[in-house]
Length: 363
Ligand code: SF4
Image: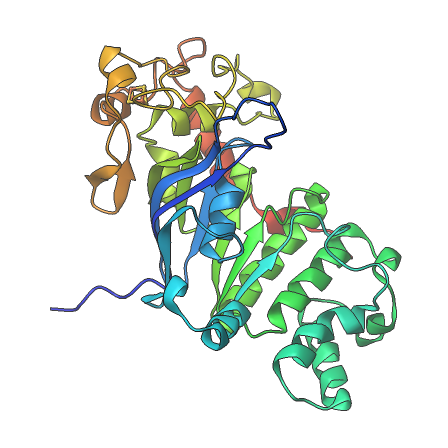
């Protein structure tokens, strides 16, 4: 019997509440429940995607897992070790191994530093390499991410968005990370440049044996590059599944709605779009029972009163819905009532035929 492998990174019942500002004579405001009681394990070498609407808590969860934010409650385990119990020196070493690529390549690079200083800074901080060795390492990293060694003498404003994101990736690689969090790394880039960055991340993952945690909006990119997907709604994970299974038979009505909301750019496949009712409720005052019940077309009285358990639905798949079985069997028909029943299959076809390589342009 083989023992299950320890996840590289695991969040156990993570909760993060942000307290809203409180002034003199002001009423105390309810805290914003950005992440609520989430447990999530990331396997070694996989690409796990966190998806959901803006405000669903996916970026906050990513930052909690990387120990960039302190959790209100819950634990983060790295290689089975609780980061909350690690001495400072060991935590520093762990931080080197958990790196982040930021969403905005324009804001995440110091405009007063040369590219060589930006990429060389973690090497200078964490090793005792000589200046010439550091310069050689920076030149090697620049080549690894598809830039030229002479780019090291330039400043960030001299580069395009895609090139800046490559610089951000090179800086993350400089610490020899084992896991990289991409916090919407493609969302500020043109579509053709997005494809280049997706391909670069995939190549680097295989070259360096990385584990990737990707926070993203673009479902086509997620479909292409991830192994498993965790869908978040209002601070909670509502579905977790291998990528193919999730896109082929989404169990949770919110996952079905996310897939249905993807625009179709072919006239022959265009269908009336089904849009979720209303806005996402305030995370400072989430609905009782199932947090999705105010917008769910399948909601019943039980949903308003009893919170669904995030349970194993089928092997390797978890969902938080009282009625996932009958909703999945119905294939989301009620959600797509305004569209012909083939709409779902057509969208799936588009996801499957998406290929970043086919969109790649010459740099
Ligand atoms: Fe919809 Fe009820 Fe399932 Fe929540 S528990 S997703 S409200 S059917």
